[in-house]
Every structure is written in C-alpha cells, then in structure tokens.
Image 1 (tube, each protein chain N blue to C red):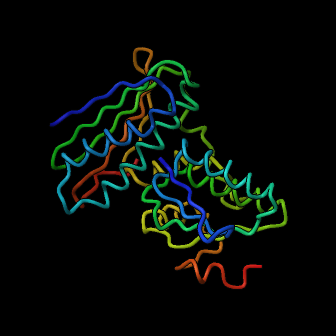
Image 2: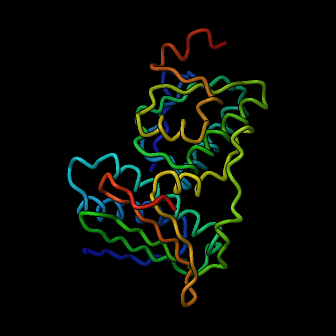
Length: 111
Length: 140
C-alpha cells in the first residue's frame, strides 16, 4: 500500500509512504497527472516513508518526471532511504533527478 | 535444506503477498547480520514476480515461488506458465535515455550470484542463487 499525502495546504510537496512497485507506481503517476492537469507542475516528492522500491517503482518516478517535464515543470526528490538510493544509483536514475537531503532544501529556489 | 513454497494466480495484485512471503521465508533462512542480503532478496523476488506476471504469463495461469537454503546458499525459484523467453536475448537497460522500464533482469543479475532460466514440464523456471559465504564459486 502506498499512501500519498499532500503537505502545507496546496503545497507541491508530496510525502509518500509504503512500497513503490508495479501496483503503486501507477497510483503515483495518476496523482501526478492530476496535479499537472491543475498546473501544479513543480513538485517535490518526499520519499522518507518509502521503505521499498523496485524497478517498476523507479519506472513510476521516471514517468512522473516526464509528465511534469512535458508540461514545463519539474520533479525533485528528497529524503531517500538507503535502499531506495542504492537502487537508483544501480540503475543510474539518480542522474535524472535532483535529489536533496531534506524538503526545505528541495523547495528552495524551486519556482 | 529448509524449503518454502507458494503458488499464486498470475495477477500483479498478488505482488505484495509474494513479497511478504519471500521476506518471511528468507528471514528464517538468514541470520540477523544478513539484513542487507534480505533487502536485496526482497527486490529480486519483486522483480521476478512482476516479470513472470507481466511478460511470462500475461496475467494468465499461475506463478509458483520456491525458496530454500542452508548456511552456504539461498535459492529462489520463480516458475510461470507463460510463453517464456531467452535469457540471452533480453537487452541491457537503456541507461542513457533514462528508460521507464527494462531494469528488472539487470537488477536480478546484479543482486544474485547465479541466474539460470529453463523450461520444465510446462513451467518456465527462473533459478536464482545467492551464496552466503564470502567465497562465491562462480558468477553466472
């Protein structure tokens, strides 16, 4: 189960909790699509609560990045757990995203 | 050698169940100092199950998961009833273009010490071995 929670009243910071895999990657993509459709296209994903990710979950993140990017926006990531970070590095996908240690740094100058 | 097995319908909604089962089975086969291996095996099972459902069975038939091990090695067998594929024909991931998919088998090969694929009595069998001692006999 993946829980997606928006923070800060209309903010573009999303906190994800749970597993990011073939089931939940699609759920995330639908959420991001909805935000992009409403012109919320600068998005920070807080992954501190994601304790498991596989290649389908990574693919979901890439799909979200492409959705935002295509609309002229961007997606930043923050607070990656070690297991998530190491799989991103193994697949070289860490080069696609700007990755930050905390939400505040990720949101800084993100306009 | 202790053995655990589970047969599930080839549906992606059963991925969490397959992952939970494999994690508990592997936990009972590993000691507390091998948590990094446990994390790797959870990813490997998730990749193998997803591949079996999406590309092997195409959402039809069953997937059988077998996990066994001793102090020297841990073996995961993922079996499906799909059309199968040739391991040697699976392309490398497209790292340069940040592809959305195509990393599953690559991750499995990176995390495991031995990867074999065969067909036996209408089952396609992905046979994965992780050696638990420092001396690995061979890589693939």
